[in-house]
Image (tube, rainbow, N blue to C red; front, side, top):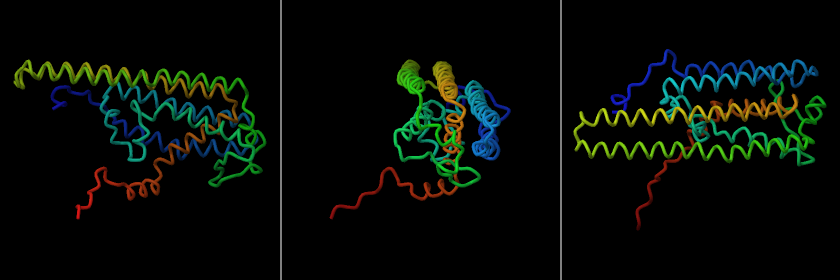
Length: 273
C-alpha cells in the first residue's frame, strides 16, 4: 500500500551493490595495507594508510547520505545487512557509540599494566615484542588532553543521540495520528484517503531523511574528531580495530554459527501434565 501512496525515486544503483564493493575494498586492500604499514618503521607510510582508510570510511557515510536522500527505505529496511549486523544498527547505520566504545577499549587496556593490544599483522596475532616500539606503547600512557577530548566527545553523543531518537519517535507518532484521523474522516473510502495518507507518508519520510542525514553527520564528526585527537600510531590501531570489527561481522563461519544457534522468540512450552 505504501508503494502506491508514496512512489519512491528509483536509484540507478542499489546501495547494497555499492556497499558490497566498498566492503571488498576495505577487507582486501585497505585493511591489509594498514596492517602491513603498522609493522613497518616508516611513519610517513603509516600516516598515508591511516588517511586512506579514514577517507574510505568517510566516503561510505557520504554515499549513505545520497542513498537516504534518494530512497530512505534502503535504510529503514536494510535487507543488505546480515543477522549479526542488524542488532548493532541505529538511525540507519551502526550505532554512533561504536566509535567511542572501541576507543574506550584501547584506553581500558592502557589501565592494565600487563595487557597488550593484539593486532593482526600478516594474518597472525603479534604480541608486545613483535611490534614496533611506537605501536607497542601507543596506548600505554594516553595524554590528559586525549582523555579530556574523549570525555567531551562522549558527552556530546549522550546529548545528541537521544535527541535524534526522539525525532524518529515523534515522526512515527505524528504519522500514525494523521493516518488514523484521515481514515476516520474519509469513513473508510480508500480513494478519498489515498491523497491525504500519501501526504502524511511523504511528511514522515522527509523527517526520517533529515534525521538520518543528521545521524550520519554525527558519525562522520565523531570519527574525524577521534582521528584528529589521536597520534598516528593510536589512530592506526583504532582504525584497524574498527575495520576488523566490520569485517568480522561478515565472517561466513561466524554468521553460519550464529544462524544455527538462533532460537525462536516464542519457544513452544511443554503442555501441563
